[in-house]
Length: 74
Ligand SMILES: [Zn+2]
Image (cartoon, rainbow, N blue to C red; front, side):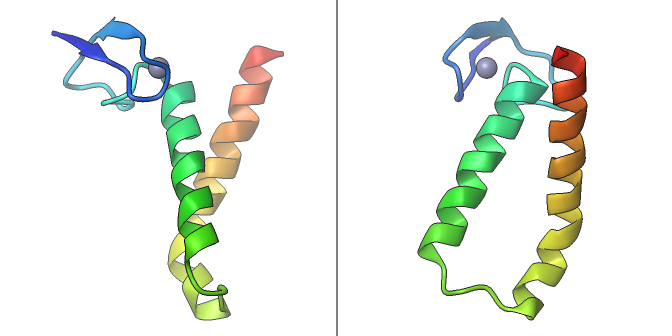
């Protein structure tokens, strides 16, 4: 199935089993997540310690993914 990536606008062959859906790639998923988190934190009240607990695992995962992405590009 052909789909359009929400991040980069590329048309790609959509794999229902893809980890990155609805994006075309890991990169685009990370870009979207980064934009989303940036917006959430910008519009939300100042973060307290309690707010960070739930997000810490996600943040750590994002950081690890970003680091891996950089290594892949190098
Ligand atoms: Zn894309």
